Image (cartoon, rainbow, N blue to C red; front, side, top):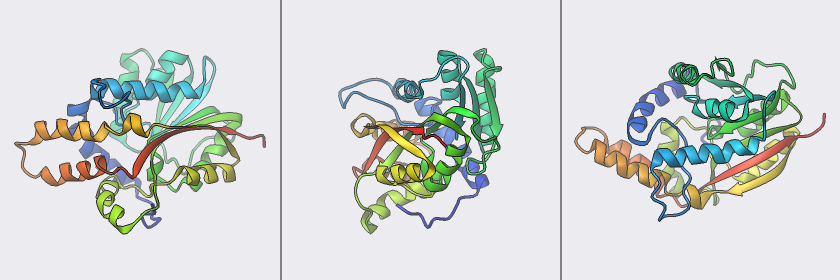
Length: 272
């Protein structure tokens, strides 16, 4: 899905996430990504399911002590800190959201990881790092904010030969129609999303950037309940607050969109 191919200003993304973070955080916990459930009968809490998703994604980075990892669009930094703590890798975590970076820095310090995780404000499309700086890169539910061809070119530049990129993202399962756009467009617009790409779009962009796919795992059935459970929890919490119905309807339309799936992709940087 093309949202006009207009790049959203970092300040707009920062403002949006500041408004949503507190609302979602008080309901579902601090993580800002999908949860991972075994199926509709899995009664795992939202916060536990998001931690499960974190572990599912981070395991694919396959890094250890001495590894240098870049977390692109790190949000509040919980996955970055968890990665450093569990693997021993050093992590540079970037985002344009200053509030999230502050929270991440505090979280790292509280868990004794201040020396292992370096939080920096940086633009993912203008990475301020030398060529071949990192052994692995993580893009955890951030690609809809970018033109993936431009994003992957920048990531490939900072990856070392045979370095690994792990991407977890929602994706479009069917060709876009105006009817689908009408239902899910408000949610994407609320998040200042640029596009919602197919896995084929990702594979093509990665290939052009010099990266080869090594694993693609469709997690649609595992993440399908994420937003329906979140909407249910939000409705209970916000039913007495004025002015929230439109927001809840926007979330609900995304939750009900069976045309949207979830995928985890792992790429390797080919030799220069």
